[in-house]
Length: 257
Image (cartoon, rainbow, N blue to C red; front, top):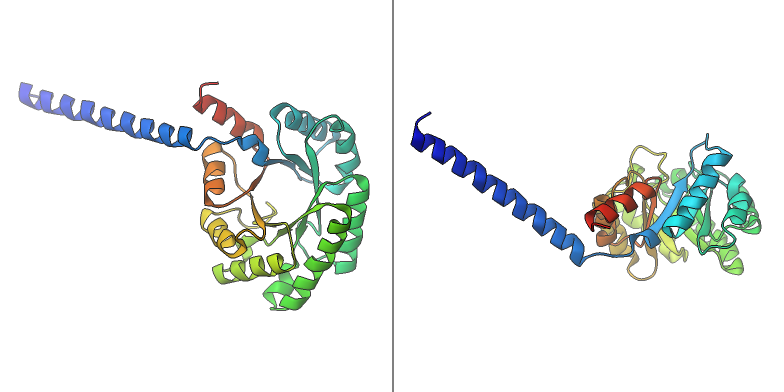
């Protein structure tokens, strides 16, 4: 390689490195300008079938340590979590009609009352997806409305999971509208057990329909700080994730804490 060619190559490499550093700096500046207390957005979640008592206990201690909004667990673990979290501000969230949404309404109503009596502060209910896809919208709305009345009686928050991976954009709009009309407190994207999780474009659609009448919970496949932040920017008020610790660690690393 002659001298002029060498200089040209080195110059290009130096320029490329400078540009890359500026891009990284801009990204960090953007994140710094948007910094929020992301821990308070997180429902620290463990819903897998083989979750052990030790794992659930660890989940509770992690939620206390990192000041997460809640732990989200299957109904069997509510009383246990209530006891572990009794001296903290961390709430207990549980699920009904989970994960398919195909449980009969009267069974969902029983589940709702039972998890409330066991100590749940919030309930994530799976919409009857089959009835919705069959266009039996009034039946879907009434189920949500009736369960909301139970939650309202006890001062418990109701989130309706519409399982966006099975829905078209128009169906996401419709399911969100039905949930809002039935007075759900949140509309939630996913169970985490479907064929896909939360997507930015779906959050935006849901937020556009819900407006200020209901909040949005993004869940399913949210495994890092950057993705969580994008969901919040798109309109999510809550993040359901089993990667809460990783998200917090990445946040602290980003801000050199």
